[in-house]
Amino acid sequence: MKINDNALILTPSLHISGSQSGQKASTVKKNLFFCALSLTAILLLLSGCVTACAAVPEEPETLPIYSGVTMTANGANVELYSVRANNTHRWTTQTQYLCDQIPVGMFDMAGATPVEITLPLDVTNVTVRPLSSGITAQRNGKKITFTINEPGQYSVEYNNNIKNTVLIFANPVETFSGDITLETGIYEQNFDVPAGHTLHLKQGAVIRGSVRLNSGSKIVGRGIIDGSHLDDWVLIGHKATLPIEMYNASNVEINGISIFDPNAWTIQILDSSNVTIRNLKIISSRCNSDGISIQSSNNVTIENSFLRTWDDGIVVKNYTAKDSHAITARNCLLWTDLAQSLEIGVETNKGKRANPKIYDVTFENLTVLHALHKAPISIHNGDNAEISDITFRNITVEDYQSGMGDGWNYLIDITNLTGGAMGGDPSWTNVTARGSIHGVLVDTVKIISGKNPSARFDSREGGSIYDVTVKNLTRGSTPLDLSSKAGANCSITFE
Image (cartoon, rainbow, N blue to C red; front, top):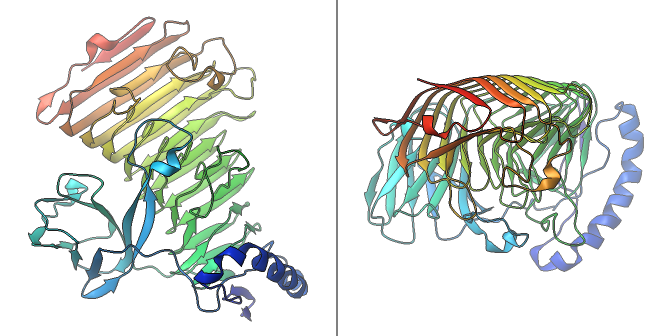
């Protein structure tokens, strides 16, 4: 550890080799005790920067490297992390034992960047997503080559099997700083970032714990929050460790980092406001591993991010006495192995209060690379909220396969039903009285390839769905007509 210019910079201070992994937990606890004693005075002088000290390898450890696949960018080797991904589409508490490992590469780029991937088998075909990038890859035996012209997130899929995927996070060149800086290494601890402070994760910094953000705080950089060391939270004797959480916070920023393999949902935004998320990358694979869960919060903006999840990608709910509103997600990529890509609900009044509302929510210019389980577009009013002023605009689904496993073949799913009636769990509903859904626009939704979709609009238990407009739906070059799917107590205009 070193102090520099009134900033706290945490550097490796403890050697833990792979052969000592069985002793790691006890060794970390002992070193944390002595480290905490030595840091106490320093932290007081700094007006508080973190709530624990770092215990990481002297020779910095990193995440496991994927074997059998290599990659270069601009001729330089790129480390490929081995990250757990879930290619199953049926709920089970044993899901973590059914996952695969995929290679994930990250680098910064400032111009056209040639990329070469070498695989352990001959390549018969290759697709680079998003298709809107216009990247045409060349293949030669075991090699794939192409050029990335602008920063973004990319999925390289080969030999007609989405299990054969290399994910690339090509970041823009940016300069980050913070008064709490983590150097390369693994930090097995939680961080509580005080109000007004910034936690900067340098490239190669890995947090194995939870980060709590308070008002005016930020987490930025090219580092990773990793949950691969934890068992799934639904297993007996384990609990949820949320990579990022905030409660009653305002003016919070998340920028540039990656989150891999949380053991529960990934980001919890509760009773918070003015939250900005940019260039966030999430890969989750466990039970209830939603990407971004917005609960009773407002003025939240999510942009230019990547979310591959084994539950809802972005979900908006009401949990407490506050209404969720003024929420925008735009220019993001989603890959949804389980549940919905873009969801409002199901818990719309978990606090059981009078006159709950969710309003002014916009999802626009979003691409779902793979929709594999349930609806990419959904509103599930499981309680009695008034849900209004909701927009889904310019949504592209590159590969529509919803209905796999125990999923539902719905492109659009808008219901005013209790959890049990909608086909889910009755416990999702907290108030049996029905609410309303109105002022909804679904405009320009394109399926590029995949199966023929269905839809659901259903308020048969009471309440109403009205003033809903659905227009400009296509599958390939063919217009989609879902007008026959409007159910009881629903007034839907199809154009």
